[in-house]
Length: 88
Image 1 (cartoon, rainbow, N blue to C red):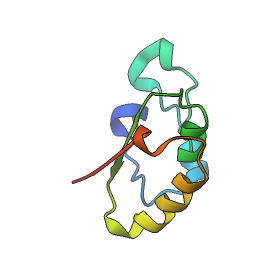
Image 2: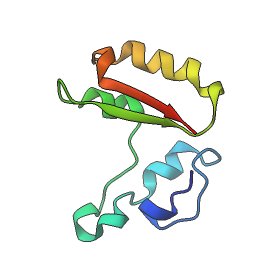
Image 3: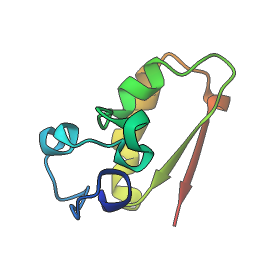
Image 4: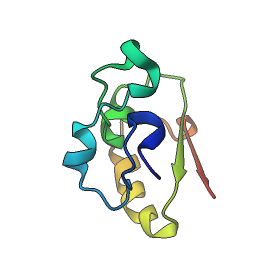
């Protein structure tokens, strides 16, 4: 739930406005190869998901995010088998 590993910043994902998360270098973990990578919206990830490939969505905040997730998935240009959802 922190951006420490990917962006090198101790910032809570669930408590930080998306605009601040988007401004971070989310590819810091990859060194020069990751320079300039930004945190995408789920809609953006799903829009470029290749046919036949899958995405794993790991819910960190519990069931309260499910209604919003359902709305995003209904609008996405993907097949249901392409989405795997997990939770801790």
